[in-house]
Image (cartoon, rainbow over all chains, first blue to last red; front, side, top):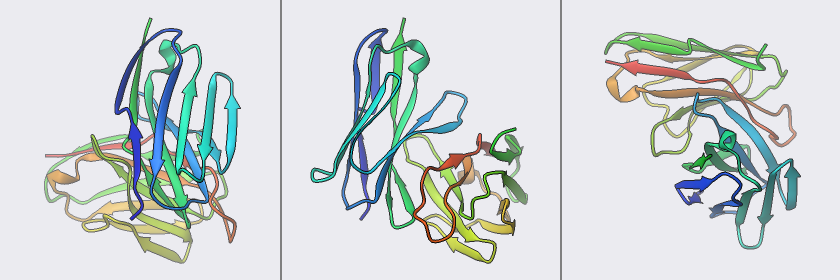
Length: 107
Length: 115
């Protein structure tokens, strides 16, 4: 069964804090995605990775294929980072989504 | 213009009404998906299509139907809407041909309320 679990479900941070969101999955994958959903509802892709680490601005995504685990880090968090972050993995041509981590960054 | 456009963005309807949600994309992708999002649940797949002649059921297809009118257009219909179909619906596109699906591009979502 393809399961994707994220932790924490909800996270509140002070502006400037370092944030980590975790994602665990149950089956072998071809790729893992991190998505961001803004309060208005739209979803955008942040990262797609199958090994190692990727960095984009203040966002860093890592994956450990052997442990079936990925993390999304946000450095120097800012209120505009407030959103729901969703982890998804690809098995075959299907996407399996976590339930999301709701992040609120307080000024 | 957005890469993936959904219409309508918001719709309130009554039980038993027929509703169509439309999706068009300018990415040139073959693969298109319809997902449903409910509070506390991850995105769940309703239907997907890997080309114009290909339609496949997802995990929650009951009560829904789709039509792939062209490579760029994929519509979702609720033949007789019921209140538990109240949700946020997303169309997404990504990947073509035999290549693995890469990045997914989402529409802005269609919020449907069934009274």
